[in-house]
Length: 140
Image (cartoon, rainbow, N blue to C red; front, side, top):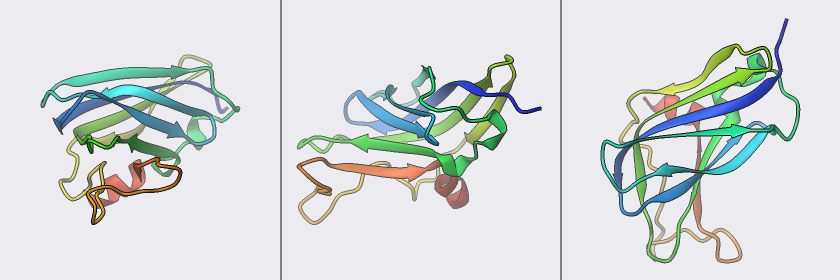
């Protein structure tokens, strides 16, 4: 029997960063929140938990392609590169499941992208870079 996803915990270790920053994390259509995962201190580990899903999803229906990381950065071009990332889901029955495991983030995959002017403009002055856990795992 499938259990309903109630909580998601994200654990991130920093490879490098220029400032402390929030990382937006989306898990399917159930969770979307800016979490304080990015730090300027190499080797530090941050843990953040999202509760109160917006929609009902079963724990076993979530795959790494449903997990999206996004960083919005300012004019200063804030950069954060993770060293590793883990996403754990907890069901309504108390069971837990590892949803994504990236113990060693591949150097070819960054979470900041710069255009010719040093920034990537998306719309209305918002700048961001997004990647799915699946894409990162495939690049490993």
